Length: 628
Image (tube, rainbow, N blue to C red; front, side):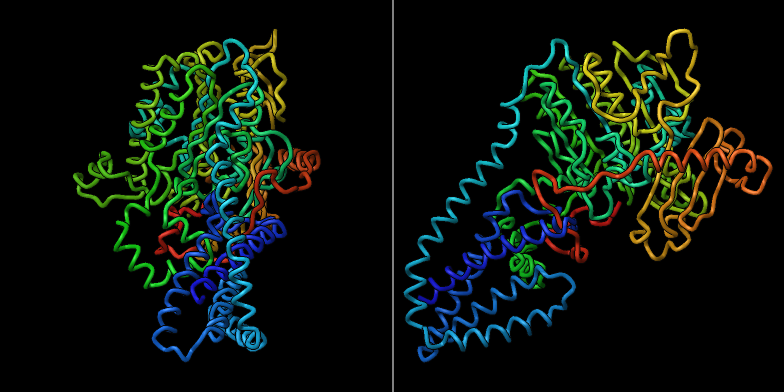
């Protein structure tokens, strides 16, 4: 009976924890980092995890009670109550461990005393209801398992017929790649010969700017065509459910939609990036079912696994590299090609996010490290830039392999290929390193290449400043010219297809506007970073970059004569002439684009992080350092 009581408490606590988790996600509308590693089977894994843990505790207590028969049944119930309350209390953020222990112990003692005289009735109630609880759990397992396993097939079964001749669409985002580090953009090293070849086969934009200097809001703009203050995706906050995404548009046109993501945190499905995708793969583990995944689904399981005892067991059973990894370009390419091969008869929209150029700039084992090796051979210490360039060279090599495989499959020449980055990376410019900390050129100037033989002329170079905000409208217009693109902004094809009678465009298709609002996320040791001073905005024209900092300070740079943004012109006659116009442009843009009212995503609800994960945890994010 002691063991059966343990199983009963495990199932009950599991269902209560599931309800608690859903309530927190719904009520807070915020995301925390441990939520990003929530397995999609969570609805049954949480009660099963508690069933296993309470069953193990019940087995141990049964053995103890058999050895010391005088203990009996009733004194064991407070132990189960304590474990349940402690487990449910782990969902409450900000409490110290001992506060949870003391509160759970005190309540368990009071409830145990109140239930002391109902020992026989408790046993009868457990025996009568446990089978029904297990049946309900079995139904939940079957329903959720089939829903997760069949999601992609279900999404593709309802696709309309694509229009004849619809091209494949391949969107490659090279996370943390600044334009001037690449061969086609004049890099001092030949880091990316394959991208240079791709650029020669299509259109290269020399002055493309991201909408934000870090991953989450930048990708949200790439998917929706909305400015960051419109889609509202930010630290712990998902995309506001307003307007379609690129994947939703292509699914409505009969496309298979697939995404393979290496930045598993800030391109995670929980932020709403999976909207419209039949297949969206960030963490491999989020769709797998293993004993470790089941155990870590519950808060109590996570607590056990992150303890020294649990860590010792996990590391003795699982080799650490197997549960601590970083998705490489080779892995992304392998997964994408395998997905493409499954249904060759239907056009595909494929989004690939590469993470190889992100810090800590370590190429995968076996990759060439030519630039770091060259520095060492030259007798100098290697720099972060040497390792960064090695990562770019590896990434370029894998992209070359991907393109060769597409050509071998006969899918390359009828494919719209867009290569860009979500943001750049600073290496000491303005005294800054990294990204998400300013709106200066090293963080904002990104590559943009479009290869599409039917529409994009080979070898064309566009010098006009453009914003990645216009990419959704551009991609939709190029792939389906007869369909009205449901995205704000203007197709960048106008840059090489000017209106009749005009040689070039006089103005960019959309304002080249960028913003960042994450002062609380900038590390304390980077107190000098401009983003620490509050929300920032910038505008880029064909001549000037204008930046307004969070403290109201302004900066103005002449891009023609000062491309590295070294001399702030504020206070000069040039600034007196230009600043009123730029201030007016910025004011009008912010007034014309008001943020939508955020609503809960259709598919999932989300919650904000209470504290970072333990980097030694077997279920911790493998890329916990990334942050951006």
